[in-house]
Amino acid sequence: MTFLNFFQYSLFLTLFGIYTPALAQSDAEKQKIEAFFKDLETFTAVFSNIKQLYVDDVDNKKLFNHAIKGMVSGLDPHSGYLEPKEQKNLLEGALGKFGGLGIVIGMKDEAIQVISPIDDTPAYRAGIQAGDLIVKIGDKPVRGMTLEDSVELMRGKAGTDIQITIVRKNKKPFVVNITREIITIISVKGYLLEKNIGYIRVSSFQNPTARLLKQTFNDLVEENNAQLNSLILDLRNNPGGVLNGAVDVSNLFLDKKGLVVYTKGRIPSSNLTFKIKSGDIMQGLPIVVLINEGSASASEIVAGALQDHKRAIIMGSTSFGKGSVQTILELQKGCGLKLTTARYYTPNGRSIQAKGIVPDIELKNIILENEAEKSVIETKEKDLDGHLEMEDPSELSSAEILSVQEKNKEKQNKTTIEKLKKDYFVHEATNLLKALTVLSSQ
Image 1: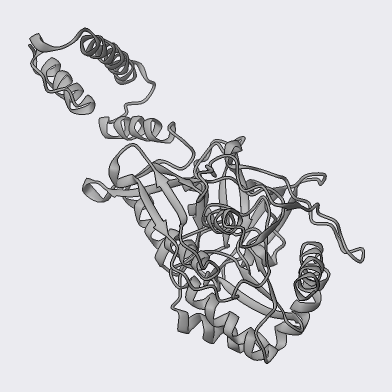
Image 2 (image 1 turned 180 degrees about the vertical axis):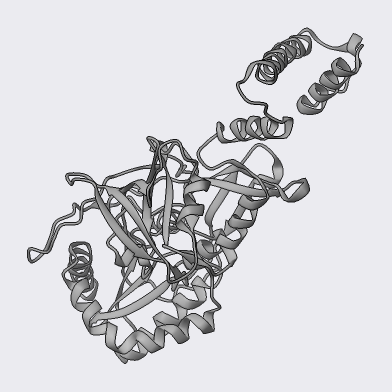
């Protein structure tokens, strides 16, 4: 047996977990080995032809990297092989502060798909909407560009400008000029819509989100001079985030035994259960949760848990449908592997993946008081071709975020509440909560 054949044989045994001597192998095991070697012969034939015939000389490392990337990215839209720079960008995206636009993006039909703009970021203020297609960044078309390359182009020093060309349903392509900023996500905001009716907006899930939500709720109770008798929890265009953040937020509204969410994968370590820790801050009073096609991942976990436990009425449109768990594995020389290892399931065993959360009450995008209609292209998890990435998030401590909120609160509250009352989803949720309050008092 040559060294190459021995290497191939050893690799096969390692990959498929077959350690029995050759003579003791079953027919099924022999067939697997034969099929493996045939596939490996095809790979080596392609590799050899590229090395001999391709117009330019390509080094082995580049070819192997391309092969690995294709192997991993072909699994699903969220798995990926990360070279050192990409691994660094991913870690910065989760923890750092750097110049960016503030959007969650994915690939669709060789264009960059906006899954959701992040609240109070340059992209949000520039009017970027869920469903927008980015077809050009500066003077560079995105056709043929990887998602990682497009993210790299959109990032940059705070204060610098970038032009992006947008395609939106029922509109001609148009150019938006955006000034990059240091992205600091304030994930929780709350307002007293009227006496006894609170509104809390959660724009993403981070480790301190549950603490911020509880503090925001307490502030609303203090402003109301009494316990709220109903609450609107707005998760629209919330792209998700940290799993523990979603579990902790769910626990703020649940007060019974059972599960918040569980995960299932191929290996035992991927099978996890997250149990309810009782402590309903609303004391059983009515809650409406708002979702739409931009609500994904962690926000779907919260909506699914409250729906299954019949703790809240879910209103809006069917959510995005990202119900998979990604694990980041560190590899040698600074590389990384982002690999889908499990699926999320709601307490009643519903898979979120490619299905989403269906609301109890479906709402259409109806415009109140002749406000300009916001065009939304409905895109689901099943429609994605490439990675779904959070572009430029950064995390502050609870104290820092509350400090920033306090500075801006006075001047923004009045205008924001007026806008919320003109929001059709919020308007309908408010009317429903009033009706439920009347019924419960009879």
